[in-house]
Length: 233
Image (cartoon, rainbow, N blue to C red; front, side):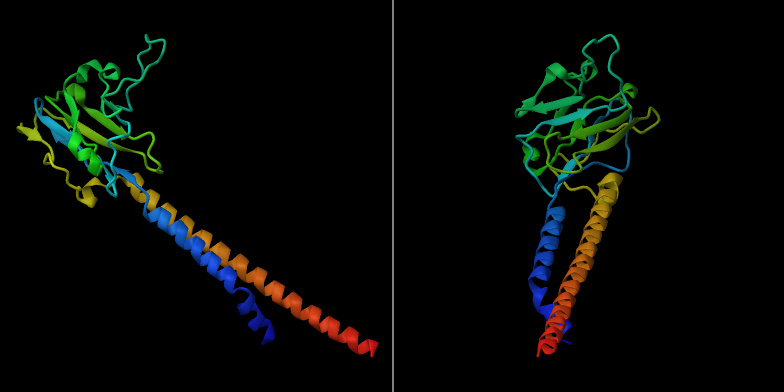
């Protein structure tokens, strides 16, 4: 019994350290800001104004950060020796940067500047055409997160009933998680939880083994010392 009593007495500090470390890791994971797009495509008719939904969760002020909207499936112009990347919309230093914008989107895109303080980085595109079809990527390069970008697909269908604006309300709203949470963000959350659980399990096993071995070693040393004393007597 003394071995087990010694084990629990000597390991109390170690168990406290493990629990504090695990709590710190879990708090960090829970507080991480993620870029959230839409799982569902945005469908519009030619001539519609559309909004490609994208926001940060939890709410995070991005007014002082760089926000990039691009079409990831487009290849750089082979005639451009610098292979420059052109954007659908580029926001930097608290303003739009039109010099690096694709000509076809000139004066046709805008962000909701007032709502960016709430994490809304949705992009409004005016007067869409079939040439605007494709995947769009919203990206915050300097965001300290594992999920810095999200993909939103736009489908411009001539057979779709034309509306005045295919969009969410102009004020910021958090989309329905079933519609707006990207698959990569969901998988990322699950993977992080799995890593945390594995990390905690390994720590517990290692700590238990180390503490029990130490206590057992101390007990054997005491027994050995006792036998040595008796033989000397």
